[in-house]
Amino acid sequence: MDSSQKTGAINWFPGHMAKTRRLIEQNIRLIDVVAELADARIPATSRNPELGRLIPGGKPRVLVLNKSDLADPAGNEAWLAHYKSAGLYCMLCDSKSRVSTKAFAALIKAAAAGLLERRARRGTAGMPLRVMVVGIPNVGKSTLINSLAGARRARAEDRPGVTRGTQWISIGAELELLDMPGLLWPRIETERQGLLLAFTGAVRDDVLDTEHVAGKLLTELSTIAPSRLCERYGLEGVEGKSGAELLDAVARRRGFLLPGGAADTERASRMVLDEYRAAKIGRFTLEDPPGGAQ
Image 1 (cartoon, rainbow, N blue to C red):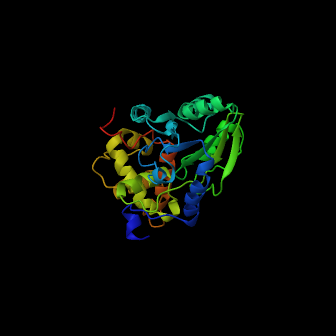
Image 2: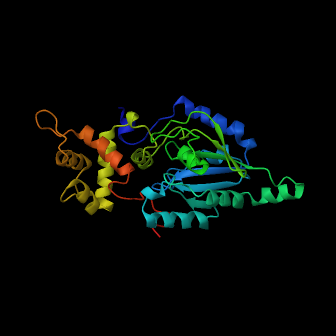
Image 3: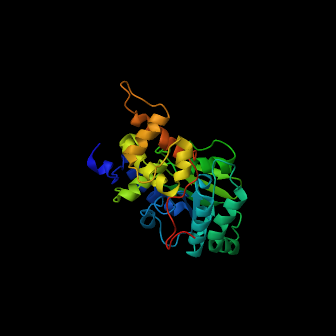
């Protein structure tokens, strides 16, 4: 593990992501609307700034704040209000449950209102809208599409980097969705950005120092939700403790010990990250909208 990864400045851009950029550029002319998925737990950091360059400015776009069931309900509403006030077509989504096809289609149609009016004048109103589904790795694109389609049409797993090629999926007679592989930007510069993406699983754990990441997560949770952290792991007095101290305490409370009695912090780090991502510790939104929490 090099020092840049340990400080959170992640450089992880495998070859298939460069291919994804090319696929977006090659297919964007076929697309009527772009549906961008972001992670509701980190609604700003999980939006890829490269999409602004890859997608023409006049192309209709919608924003889906996915995994809202894992984020704080008040945070969900604050971010939804923020993005709507900025003029974006936006909705919350829990893609683990059956997504409302009607609500998603309504959002797409609202963004494509101008196009639909032009089609009506030309007599082509029955044509389905072609929607490109984009987002960072592990944000739930394929799971969302499967939920909309009511069947396992797109390959979906709870880890980044599974979708590697494009797939067209019809959603009734109204929509045709193009599922794109997840795309990060070439270099994640700040420690905060890198850690948020690591916490939520957008970056593969095997390229990270998971003990460092889990320690940072525990430090953050000890500040924003100390009682939930103590309740989950049977801890006391978590405020002011370092990530290493917290991870050691969690390992010992769970009985994760190595021969000789040392805490197995590597095993504990994997458990903490898994439990945070499954909202077993609690539902937390780790970013506030500009201007603070609403």
